[in-house]
Length: 287
Length: 160
Ligand SMILES: Cc1cc2nc3c(=O)[nH]c(=O)nc-3n(C[C@H](O)[C@H](O)[C@H](O)COP(=O)(O)OP(=O)(O)OC[C@H]3O[C@@H](n4cnc5c(N)ncnc54)[C@H](O)[C@@H]3O)c2cc1C
Ligand code: FES
Ligand code: FES
Image (cartoon, rainbow over all chains, first blue to last red; front, side, top):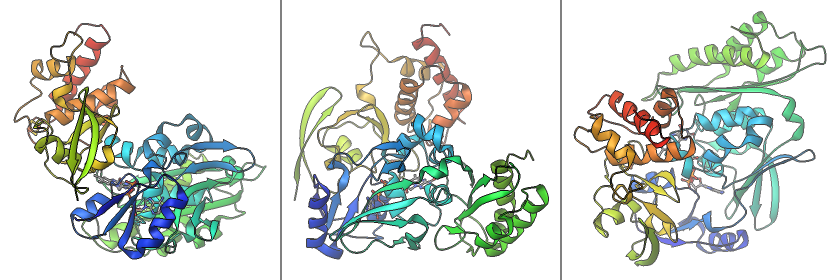
């Protein structure tokens, strides 16, 4: 490690630094991923641009028009302990609670978890289930992008040179979605072997599926929606039979690899098991 | 190039010149001689380097010293009871034999401090959960959990 440490106080200052130093600069938020990567020499930037001195990027707020707005620098711990998040979008509170250990959650930020773009990032599946959008600032101004399009490969995002993630927005309409995130890992402080988020909005009849999202983590180069499984459920009655079928389809859609944590076959089987469980919880069917 | 960093360590305003890539753990140990903060994995996994930053438990091996600019750090050396003697957590760790080699102990105690500050009356399950990021190779954890439960009772004024 050998770098210059820069601490911009505003987003425009941060963007100017990134524009000046281009690929030799790396953004830092909490640093819990970045410091590990620099120490192992996976990356070796000449400039580290720490965003944490920029005020006003760690907010969490909700209004009925825009929905939930979370600043990129909000800590995972803040998401876990926010009563607002717990009440309106409990799936995000639960995902935050399942990410690493309390001391990591105190430093780790939401933006860092997403921009690090690990296929197993615990905050991604729940947010994608909730149809979250990424708020991106860049030299050309601010843009929004569906979070599911934000990831382009392991460690890769759609951010272009000089852009930073400034926040996440969850539409207010999704507050009626019943969503859960289940993380299958060796222990709570381990990375996910498989992560599954399922979100369901039931029709006014309370039985058929008006909207459904199934999002899989750690089983593809990026977090992915199991779209065929979703399609199989849409408009149908959400009963045990439909859920068993959807879970089977989701397992077929996953594209896992074998690594130190699990074999591809095991992951595929766990997608089936955890998709079933997640859908049952979301649908309110006790298993 | 070394950068000037000012920070409050255990209640005293301090100043140090640190390379930007030096970790807070390294600076506490090597520049300030505060060897109670241990470095074991250096990857955030074990908790041996846990200190309090503005009152919250963090991994000092993953925090650049320059990032701690202007903030309050408490290490195990700075933890004290109300009377200036041992903190109830330190006392309970001794009484309950929650220390063997001692390498994990400072991190365990500061993690427990941060936990009890937020939740003064945790259940045993909440203690296990809150301490889950701290590894101990010796004790098997049972005594550590006992010690934290005992300290929390004592700090609430219940004798145990
Ligand atoms: C021991 C340990 C256990 C962990 N366990 C888990 C776990 O269980 N689940 C999990 O999901 N993760 C886990 N992590 C990974 C990590 O803690 C999280 O991903 C965390 O949320 C990263 O946030 P950060 O603020 O620390 O990111 P940083 O390390 O600061 O940044 C991560 C990456 O994102 C980029 N970046 C950060 N913010 C922005 C931004 N606003 N705009 C553009 N780019 C940005 C950085 O350049 C860097 O490449 C673990 C890490 C450790 C060390
Ligand atoms: S030395 Fe920091 S967590 Fe292990
Ligand atoms: S007492 Fe030896 S590591 Fe915990």
